[in-house]
Image (tube, rainbow, N blue to C red):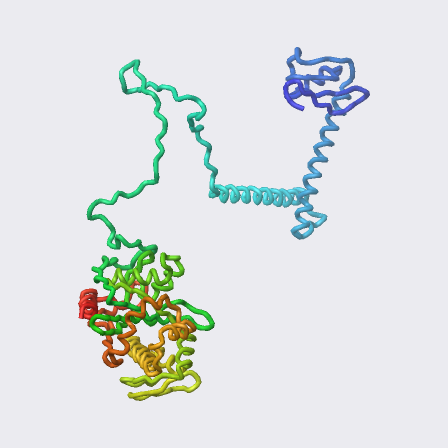
Length: 469
């Protein structure tokens, strides 16, 4: 109920309805002087707002008593609520003989404390809520041209009055490309750029050596894939160069830690090139990326490859009945199941397991000493093949080799160079290792890798002497 026309029915007293008007105020003396008043409204003594009915002043007395009774009930209800709160928090019971004033004071304190806690919690809630993100208000709608309506002419605000400029249809824009100006080409051009930010400046591609049908370069690669799985790095990288014009052969070992640019990948050790080519689906696969890496950094064209893992290496040597290896400096190192094992200098007959230990051990030596031992074992395999006259039957040799070696070498490619095996001895093969100080410098990358930075000029001079001797 509300508004100026609202009425509050207080009760029925003496058979007559007593009605109190909204906004009521009264004068006791006036009521005493007008006992006939039963129903009243407005503000007394404004008589134009009062209605008089015959009756008695007992009506007003009963009405006031009912009002006082209602107020008492309201106060009692509030006090009972406060008392129940006190019992919940286990306050001590008030003595029965305590004064009413003290009793009410304690209850009002409890009520005020409760109300204070409610106000405090509300303030905390509003403070925390003020940190909540506020949703962005929607801005004015963006006007978008309707594609189904014909373009209309629009007045040019800066042009002469009365002229208009027709609206031109939008122009299709192709993806932006950075213009390549003369001299602004990246250092790796025309090769693919890196996919990882290089830690040092990327060197430019070196000048390529001229190729010839009389020279064949074969990459002899050994991977570190183990029977239980593992990474795919070619930790053994040797390039066998055959020159049928000069009847010469050379074996060039590239340390696995040479820090070079791998096209389409970035600056990394050279032994990662083959595996990354397989992972990236590079044109030509793993060997394709290895070819481009060798051509980019050393100007060397690799014609074919032969790749062996640990198991294939051991099986090939065991199939040959073992090999004879000349150890130039010997080796002492841990050997599985045998503790510390030693080989002196000189000739040694090795089976597959011993040969693998010999080419892999490096705890007591170094990577570069291991490269030398790898060359010794390769020469031992070659000498065994010559002793068995295996190269005289090239087709049969290929069938046997295919069981242990992954290669793209074909009969047509190797047959023109088969006569070199009968014209040179193993000891006349030139052996070179790109060791630091002469062909590179030891360096630690910003991310903590120990690598070798190639000396490109020295390496180029070396390869030029071998290829053009």
